[in-house]
Image 1 (spheres, rainbow, N blue to C red):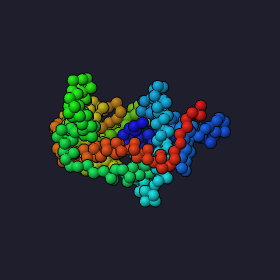
Image 2 (spheres, rainbow, N blue to C red):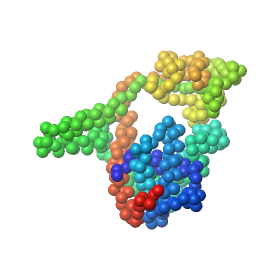
Image 3 (cartoon, helix red, strand yellow):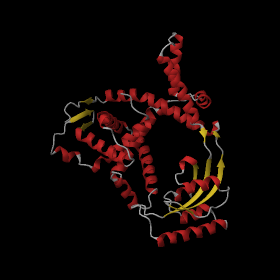
Image 4 (cartoon, rainbow, N blue to C red):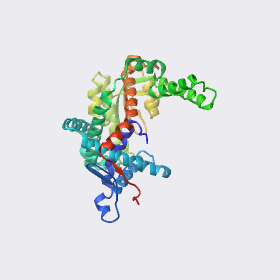
Length: 377
C-alpha cells in the first residue's frame, strides 16, 4: 500500500487525537471482546483503538462538511491502523534530542493555536466543539511533532535537490511526478511502443501535469491591505446583534476611521479596535486575491479603492469593516527568486513521499510488527 503525501499522512496522525472523547478503550474492553489486531516491539493496538480513531476522524471531517463513503470505510480503517503502528514505532525511536526539539515545536504550535482564540475558555470550547479534548489535542500535537522530527532527521535531511531541478520546475513545470511520466514516455519511444493508447494517455498526462505546475506559478492580481473589522452577529449563535449593539459598533468604527484619516498608525488602531482574532499578530494586514475574498462589499473595496486611501465603513452580512489598500500587485508569472524556495520544498516533499513506503517497511521489520485483523468483529 502506497501512503499519501507527508502532509496528508501527518494530518491523519493528528486526527488520532480526538479518540479520547468517545468511549475509552479500557471501558469498552470490559463490555465487549477487544482483540489485539496489531503488535510489535513495545506496543500493541486493539480493535477499539482503531474504532476510536476512525470515529474521531469522522467527527473532524464532519466539522468540514465531509464524510467517509461506506465503500471506503475498510480502506480507511486499514490506513488508520497502519498510521497508528508507525506512530507507536516512531515514538519509541525518538532520541532525547528528538523529544526536546519536538517539545519546542509542539509548544509553539499549541501557543499559536491558543493565540487565535480570544481567551483560554474560548480555545478549549472551540476544540471541544470539533470533537477534541484540549489535553488530548496537546498530547497529540507533541506526538505529531515527534513524527515530523523523525521523518525530517532520517529521511528529509538526507535529500539534496539540485538547483537545476528547481529551475526546470520553474521553466518547464517539471516536478518529480512529471519526470516519472516523461521517463515512461521515453522508454516507450526507445522501444518503438508508441502506437497504442497507453502511450497517448502518458503524453496527455505529462502535458496536463506540466501545464498545471506552470499555472500554479501564475499570480492573480493581488492586494496587500490593512483591515479593521467588528462583528454584527454573535460569533457563537450566528444571530444578529441588536440594533443598539450594531449602532455602538458603527460609532466605534467611525471614530477609528477619523483617527486613521488624521494619520494615526493603522496597526495600532487595529489592535485597539478590531475584533479579528488574528489582529494582535498581523496588525490587520493581509494579502488577498479576488477569489479569496468572499464578501462582495469587501472585495469591491479592495480592488477599486485608491492605494493609501481609507474606505468608509463597509457593511457586510458578517460585520463592519474599514479597509486601506497598501499595494496592488498585477497578475503575472511570479519571479523565480520569489518562488524558488517553495519549488525546492515541493520537490523535497515529493522525494520524501517516494521514500516513505520503504522506510516504513524497514521499521516494521525492525519492530517485528504482526497484524491480525481476522479476529476483529
